[in-house]
Length: 113
Ligand SMILES: [Zn+2]
Image 1: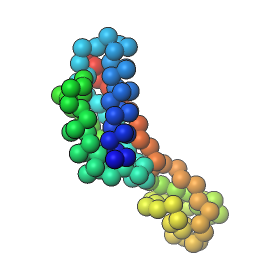
Image 2: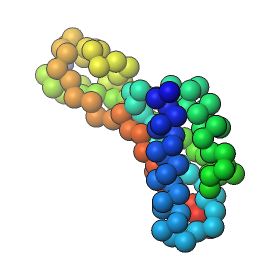
Image 3: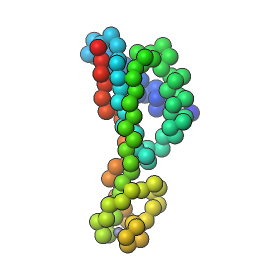
Image 4: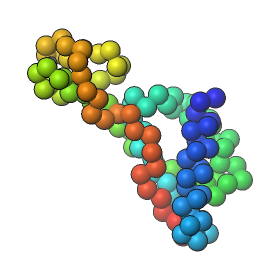
């Protein structure tokens, strides 16, 4: 499962940081997940529950910031919310667009103690 390898990657990043900071525990982790990151949140939830067992994240509070995907039309500069790569500009119908945000998948912050 795609989400499991992503979750394990996140856990590794968090544990590496916590060890580098000589922290005993990770109290909180905050993630940015874009609506076009390709993550299925149900699968992510399931993978998370499985993957954190026996890691420093098993009791960590998790916060998720959902980043709504936005694009800009390269033709008329309109900025709009986007759900798919092939969405057209709602103003001029152009498909030449630039994704501004929404592909994020990252650890925004960690609270360790
Ligand atoms: Zn346009």
